[in-house]
Length: 229
Image (cartoon, rainbow, N blue to C red; front, side, top):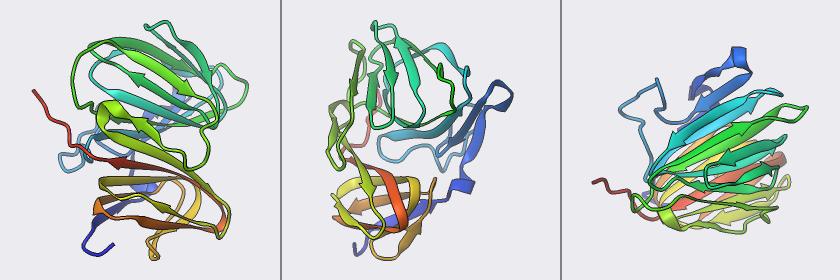
C-alpha cells in the first residue's frame, strides 16, 4: 500500500454524545450535532459513523432527514425502525438496513427489547439530491458480500474473521475501516482494536488479519466525493 495516505482514530478519541440519563450513549467519529471540528467533518461521502447503545425502552423519537443515505448495522440486541415510507421493521444482528432520505423522510429508532441494543449507524452524502425516500433491509448479509449503496457510489463489506484468519479489502479512492469487535492488523502493520477506525486515501487492495480472537469489521469503499449545489 505504498504512498497511501492513512490516519487512525482510536475509540477513545471519538466525541461522546447521546443522553446517558435517557439510556442513550453515542460515540461520534465525525463532527455531529453540537460537536464541530472543522478538520473532521467527513471522509469522502461518509459524514457520520456513530456507535449507539440504547438501554431497553430508550430510543430516538420521530425526526426528519433529507439528502442522506443512512446505513445501520446492528451488533447486539434488536432495533425497531419506523419511517414515513410505511416501513416498520425489527433489525437484528447480521442485518443491513438502508434508509435513503431523498427530499424528506421521517423515522424513529427504539430499543423495544429486554436487553441492551448496540448498533453502528453510518451516514453518507448522496451523489444526487432530492427524490423519493426509500427503505430496505437485507437479512443475514453473508461475510464479505458487497452491499452496494448506489446512491452514494459506495460499497460496504462486513468481514467476520476467526482468530488468525486473513482477508483482503478492495481498493478505492476512500476506504474506511471500522472495527466492531476484536483486534485486527491492517496492511501487515497497523493494529486496530474495537471502536478504532482507519481512513485510507487512494488505497489499493489491503490485507487484514484477525489477532488473538474473532473479529468483526465494517469496510467502506467509496468512489465519488459528494458535490453540493
